[in-house]
Image (cartoon, rainbow, N blue to C red; front, side, top):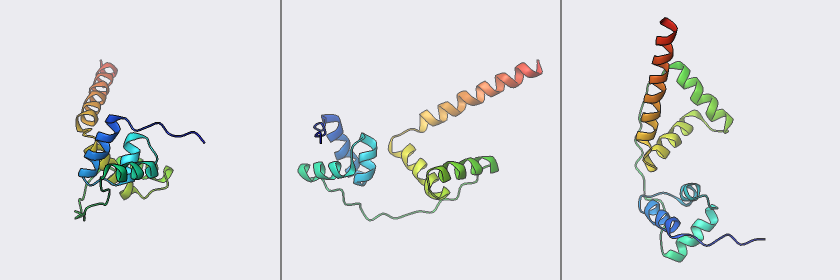
Length: 123
């Protein structure tokens, strides 16, 4: 079996920074495209602890339109997940990878396109 390539400097920085924020090996592996076992082994070699900190969970209630809820439920079902877990993972990814502007800008562009299409149909 072929040996995986060595970790790059950027991957090592990502491992250190995500571990410092309390991310586990699986989350880090997903972020850098490596196997969780290889991330754990590298972390041990670097002296980085991947033990999650004791987390305090906070409950958040979010009101969404029925069509959005249905879309979330469908996307979660396709992935074999519960809708609450799916929504939590989406929000976590947006936060961990600082995708707020990307998501909000895409939403604003889509709203602008829709407004233009509606104006064309009326005019």
